[in-house]
Length: 304
Ligand SMILES: NC(=O)c1ccc[n+]([C@@H]2O[C@H](COP(=O)([O-])OP(=O)(O)OC[C@H]3O[C@@H](n4cnc5c(N)ncnc54)[C@H](O)[C@@H]3O)[C@@H](O)[C@H]2O)c1
Image (spheres, rainbow, N blue to C red):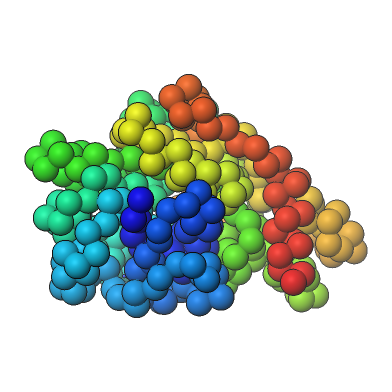
């Protein structure tokens, strides 16, 4: 199949591209390189340097006649969305709509969307949260992810473009950007390897559901199946706190690295963990990479 991957030069999108190419699909990456990197890109992928909000998207979809749109391009920083909800909505809502309009007009059969199980549910009532958990996102970023899912439901009803929304936990692994605020694993690994001091925010007891990027790419492959429809969590149903991650990395990289705690960052969710029961039952997906194994692979990548 001919597949457009937005954000395919980034961390997760580039692994999805590799997995699709390995399965024999034709991949065209659409990326503005705001955080993506040319060295992440598979040599067999074609690259179109373009912003997803651009009016040129329509012409591209018209000329290329993609079968599938896999949408990973986004402004990914929750704190940026809090500081600038308008910027976040322009990238993460308007950018999506621009793609979905082009997809509906030019024969795309299915859209696979990178949603967020860590943010669409908001403060959880159940642990782990299933897809039927109430959705009460607490950030503009989470609101944008959920609104994309609503728009996709609308495009499916109105135009018959089917969709899958993959609600990821906290994705980690090789190629994650160690700068900015997104990935604590990448940030800690890079700092420890550089002999710098990682700082744990507050008590470090906030938990997240850490899922390895290779497992996430495999979920994107299964999402191509006709039977895959609607929203699926992609996580491990396991909670890990930040201090535990620090100690694992200390054991792998540098047992002498002191454990230092800084100020608490206000406003962050205390716990987040998602069930993978639906995607296991319907698509046969389950996480395969154990956390320690995933951390070793990530450290190996950053060691070079
Ligand atoms: N990393 C996680 O833990 C996580 C969790 C849940 C959901 N997601 C979602 O997965 C997707 C990929 O995230 P990632 O961690 O790989 O981030 P990333 O920053 O590595 O990748 C994003 C890619 O999109 C590109 N991009 C950004 N804005 C663009 C625009 N306007 N036009 C064209 N290209 C643009 C960037 O250059 C980059 O290559 C995002 O939608 C993100 O919200 C990530």
